[in-house]
Length: 198
Image (cartoon, rainbow, N blue to C red; front, side, top):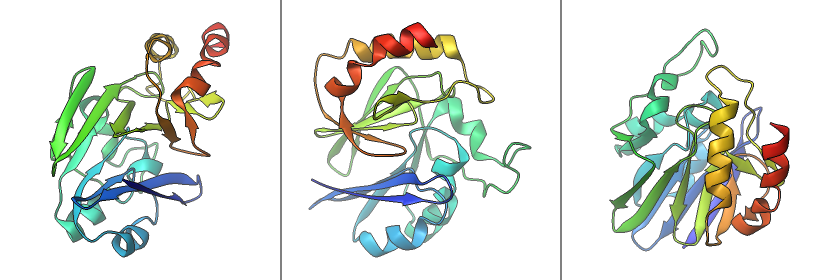
């Protein structure tokens, strides 16, 4: 499995393309992601959103139209995919599949994809596991966590999510929505600090 990454837009939001001989999965296509994605896919299978914030979903609709592939979005964040007072210029997109439940696994073109719901940064905030990789969106970063002072954020929900993350008994490479990669085990070391300081 290959993992391509390119930071997009003013917020340098990581867009990922995960691929093997079966095809490619696109995660969090942000502002200006379309040309890069089109240049790096040969058999696109799906677009996945870790959550609904504008800098992670800006190119959803354009890629849905150009590639004719389904969009998977956490159900609780579907409302964020429409233009609002918070982000009036957002190109609206409509998920083909609403992801529900605490842990949900899909077979996408023969590739196993697992969403884990970790609300707090926003209602639908999730991680996505493919093989030995976890794409953590804005839930967990290298030595940091997602902000909880945005509209629809919930610090108490974040504490509960961090407690569940700390209990994970496996390790994978962690690819966040911004910044550099890490590992689950490396970031679990910092969770007690965040639980005390949220």
